[in-house]
Image (cartoon, rainbow, N blue to C red; front, side):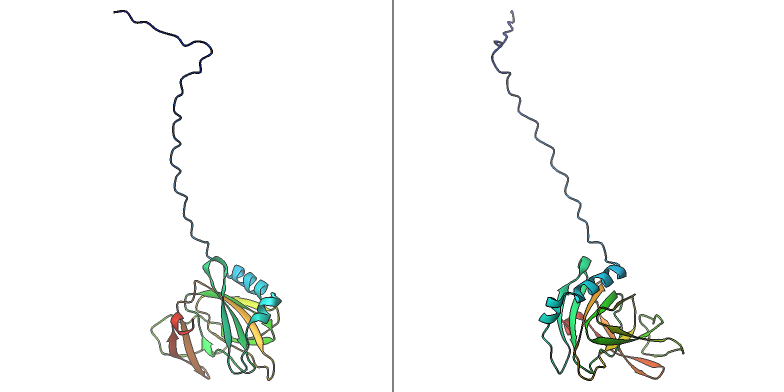
Length: 197
């Protein structure tokens, strides 16, 4: 048997070869947001405290603190808080969260302990001398703090509301509330997010 090869005329197009389908794209790498640093939290609360329109939008109550949840950076928890004259938080910590706050209107006073308390296993502690710190934070002033920071914040003005912005990362898993008599600090209550949200 003989085989015959035929050639295509020179003007005929070459036979179409189906293109090779592209390889499936690799799944995009899912990256979790980077945890904000204390400095980034402080930058956020300062910028937010300077937003006059946002600050003016907070409803103020003459009898008690008011708050509105905000979107914080990198998955942080943030709050805009109004403080009537004479109101405060009492002594508390923020568990494993670091944080920052800035005063947007008025002046707040922070009393803090310059010591890290044990995370658990105690009900009453006697505090050493020399660990108390106090600062006044006027409009535009802020501060950052690390995990297990124990403080109280209050508006000691007799007639002026204060407003502040706060941010915490990771979002607050709990707040421990304390009473203090002289050098004795006593754990009174543990609050969880469902208690304040």
